[in-house]
Length: 413
Image (cartoon, rainbow, N blue to C red; front, side):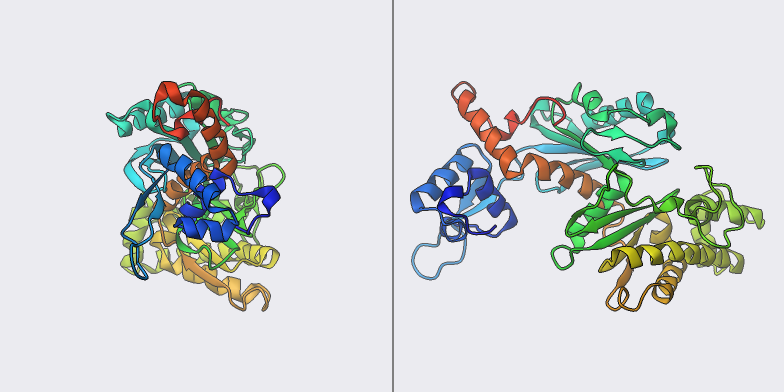
């Protein structure tokens, strides 16, 4: 945070942000960073302590005499419920307010069965994860959807696939059972943010995450934030056509989209056409590990075709890192190697001068972390915290010590 002028003194929400980030963890630090006077710092810290948003201890290092009290955010003050949905498998979790996973389960379900089937199942699983925790401990809900999403409204905008979800506004449906802020984004966007924040920030500001699983999609981190585009459709690389794809009809209606020739679904289809008995990607892994030449050829071809599209994205976006994730890239090193080779051959020399192309560091956990951060970044934004504290001040006498974040309610935003 920049040092503020007297006309724009840091609020309690700003101070909480400094404590959460570790930029200021003592009262003296806060005064130095913000320019607030000692009484003003004491007032804001006292408010955060009173409402259970921070705690303090005296175990910090001392330069002589009594060590200064160190402040830290109390991440145990509530939970967020999250779900990272895939085409056939969904990860469901409960996290604390630092995005640490407290409980997790997986649900095998075809997301194309529609919201009337999928959403009630998700909400039932969240109830199971909550166990004996009261509903009032839930501070927010975050979901990643394998579809184009209008983020501001939480509306699914996918028109050519997942037809039963198109036009569905998810937050009000979920908020009817869990009356807290609900946030929905494209699945690869939240995975990209989870991977970026947990493994790459703040060393790099620009990252391209490519998910290769049943389908192919990408999430773009530009300047440290998600690039969604005008209508939430940024990162839809799965429907970019490739050369020499063989004339495969994509589910979107076009020919030779990279999704139709290089995804996990495409690899299974091509292996079956060559006489291999494979029913899942696990079967393909077995053949790769056995060194089956036919399987290796199919996997490498998929990597080269994907590399064409990623190379174009690298030229356009100039990321510092390309991260490859999803079931396919986590299992098949030959595909990752093929992508890396094509990207470095077909992208410009400047764009690849220091470019790294590597596999995911978080693996399946990235979606959970990203969904949790999506919620936490909003409910703990300085303006949201200040609003919550003002609301708590109005009703504090009746609720005697109830945590401030419990007042962040009402609607889906």
